[in-house]
Length: 311
Image (cartoon, rainbow, N blue to C red; front, side, top):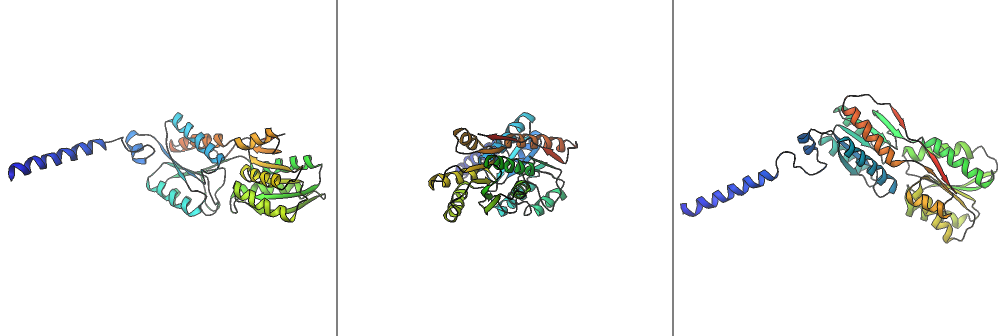
């Protein structure tokens, strides 16, 4: 019995040693905080509201490219537009002891507690595109959404000759982007006596919802001259609804200048889109995170330039 057992135990021991050697220092999965500790790199968490939107995919890609350039480990988590999921994923980043968290809130107020939790544990937080309400962050990186709303409103008024019946498709309630873009837009159109706002309804920054909400609005209001959507996904959904209803000469303005929207402007189906630069937001985010991790100061607000892409 001894002669059989001894080789067996030796084999088991050898297998265990081999298995341990495969999990040695620096061999943790890519993007894992334990790998960062082993290789000495700064680890940054990127909490994105959703990767089911081309704008935030570009933002993520811009951050990833800059992280590679800066020698930063980047861990990306996707909330899928669910505030509870985002809170859980940020708590996971806190447990991983990342140096900095870049957060693009699904809901600007809902993330406040988890942002406070991160900062009390010495983790710097930088908000991207959408601000955080109720908690302090080290920096906010975004385009000026109010200025973009003004830009969209002014273009729409010019397109309509200063008067007309318009529709506004709002983003996710509670998000700073929706609130600020709407605020800028209303600064322009509310002053015009010849402008009538037929409907103002949320479509949650989603193309399918933009389509269905616009279809419902058209059922009761076929005399529409203009539409402002708080993002391109909703604008493209609205365009589809307008085309299906056979409406003509409706000016639709979006926001973000995603590739699909820019192509639609070139094709003449979308009148204009306010151009943000999501890849640049991601790039600036990683640059700010690296500086903060290195003990340097950064500006509280880091603006990203806006432009208007139009027919």
